[in-house]
Length: 133
Image 1 (cartoon, rainbow, N blue to C red):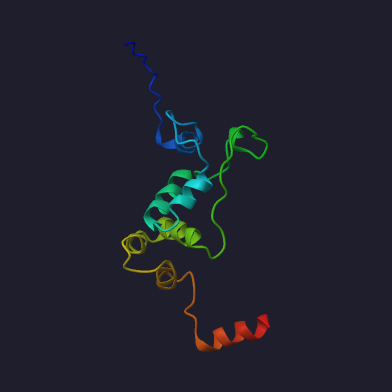
Image 2 (tube, rainbow, N blue to C red; image 1 turned 180 degrees about the vertical axis):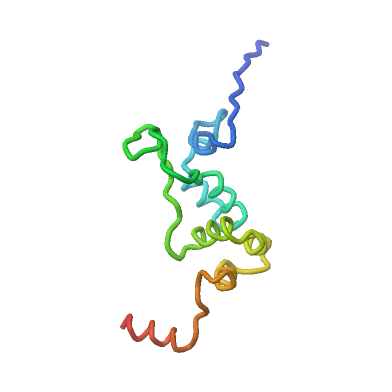
């Protein structure tokens, strides 16, 4: 019997996207979007994926610009999505972020407590229904 040895590939914290997209035995062989789809019910895992994918602040380096065709950086979650709220809570309100991940608060309740959103009142709900019809 003959054994063959495979070179071990090591990935650092900044190489998460490369690890996910590298074919199996060296990586997962999928996209970050499909990985998020697998864990769509687990808010803690989604938050860890988002933290690993999040680009550092400031101007992108030349390799991370729009014209970089070899690597793709997933866009940041935007609007009122749960991912956008988690990212903002992780940045500004660590205690509320931990409470959301532990299941003690919903992302919406934490956003209201942090002051990112206003509590929905009956008149606000009525007005949104009236305007949308």
